[in-house]
Image 1 (spheres, helix red, strand yellow):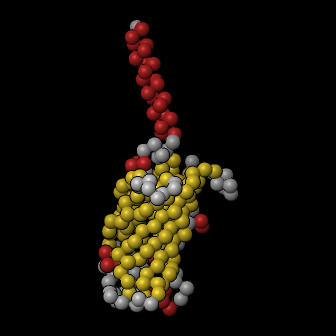
Image 2 (image 1 turned 135 degrees about the horizontal axis):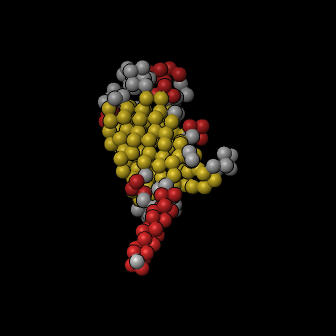
Length: 199
């Protein structure tokens, strides 16, 4: 009986520890109003054209005790693209570039998250690998992410997560090769992300 009691005690301790670990896992909804996505691409070698996109929805499941289980998803309406010139935006949204009417959304879904080397990174740095789908074509990408802060958002009063990220994309990987050799292939993207806990 005494041996059984100790076994039950051990099981209870293990379950209690597991409960604590699970409590650290948090689900966040990315806040479109406080998330910014900017991009730049070379134009004829003279200068870079800059623009942006707006996120419509996204989620982050974050576990600081098991980074590999972290999951990220995001959806961006192609029609939200803007470059400060309406004529250029119309061309980019048209059939030769993004075909917004046929492929109205850009989607990202993470496949793997790992810690990045700490050299040169003053904060918590991660590599978020995943599939980006643009114009119906899915290609693997890797975002370099800095976790800026996890804490209470002073406006909402809820737990929040803030991060900065960057990635360089090849437009040819998504079948967008118009004006190759004149307009750059590499699209450099910068993201500032705020996500609010959902529970």
